[in-house]
Image 1 (cartoon, rainbow over the protein chains, first blue to last red):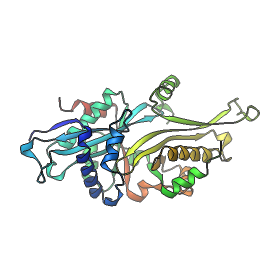
Image 2: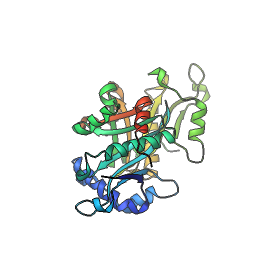
Image 3: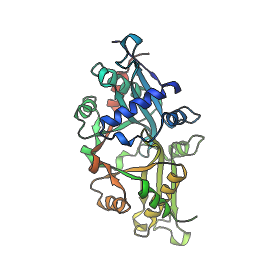
Image 4: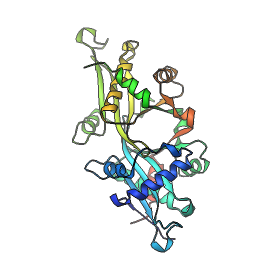
Length: 173
Length: 145
């Protein structure tokens, strides 16, 4: 089946938002999506976008059961390593279940890697859940290192009350 | 990992102090009379950049938090972290995230005491990296437009 990986446009945001919620359900955290598709539009399609996004599109004759032709996405942003300089973080990589097993996910990942190289990024990083064995195997097969397993890196988060408390403790200027 | 630093200070200048900087940075400074043994008055830093959560919107990632050993135990690290949190709030970030090594018990305890969650321990998140040859191979596999 033919498919195309291309840069997302503002008009794709409704579809990307639909798939963001599908991915949250897959990650067993369906209530965690607090943004709206309008916020995606304003954050991603403005003068200084907060992220970049690629979408996977199939022709009309291969649309999904519900009639969608945008069937996967890869959303990323740039980060900075004080050891290596500019890097890229792939925040979400998703293909609708109906379209898996055809190389769409691999193509999105490779296209994001191409973006990373064009932008002179030294690294492409992402996070994966430890129980998500198919994804972990997918990345390992492509030569990625699991830095949590290999070096012991842990991801730490402050949000809600803990973030407010921290900010309130800041010394006054 | 002392051999891992491949950038120069000139690159820091061009990346951080341009029209669209790749990072923000706070420094901790002491007065001249309290300078370090080698004569430094800038004794700590916190370097951060903005990220995007598809669940919560703009967030902040604290890439480095460091205080020279001679100046630890005086609240400098806590103050840098709190000031970065203040920046996060001002910029309407829903989250402040960072990475810590599992053997770095003082740091892990420091963050836990401040109310942070360890998402690797609690939810199983692992950090994955492509670089060097693996990144080149991946890019070379991309479908041609």
